[in-house]
Length: 248
Image 1 (cartoon, rainbow, N blue to C red):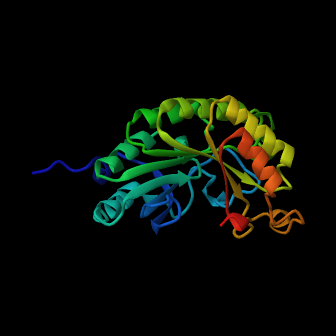
Image 2: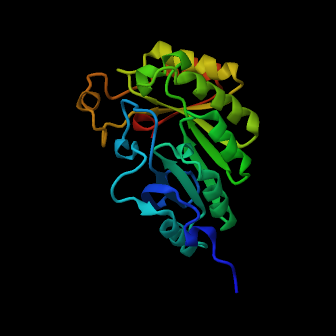
């Protein structure tokens, strides 16, 4: 008789704040499920998932239940994405990544890089096929977005670890013109280029779902990347891409 999987007997204890059983847009070319993990140490001004910030919340789904739903979708789904919140806040993450990879899925991790050591443990699980790292601002300016002092230093170290890891990755920045200036975008590009980044995605802010009224209704919207700025940023990082809004 086969041994029960660890997720079935409660040994894996992720705090799951939400589950999306099917998406075609979060990972291009893959039919994916998204596991949203509870908890985040930052309070980013534009956060669309603020309800996931506390480490515990009413209505969380047991990881064992999510795991069984994923097991049942083998042969239909290609991949599973761990998002949040901030997934690396939970120490059980590497175990869960390995469990899902052992089901035969490709695995992606979305992270803000707040804890380089936790990111390294996830990379060391040898279960992650793609890491998407949010770059919030120029590293010295992180607190203007995260509202947490000195948050840029660990984020820079996480970027270095990821770029050196050999794991497929995406560096991406959400741009609201009232929060980040064009000069700050240029600084981000130069800082990432200094770390030998070859690609960078600028995601245009989406007002839908943002709980902060002044951000939703800002006169700075819609964000637009004109051809001059686009060319300037692409000259710094050749793999520069704009996503969302006018870029669709």
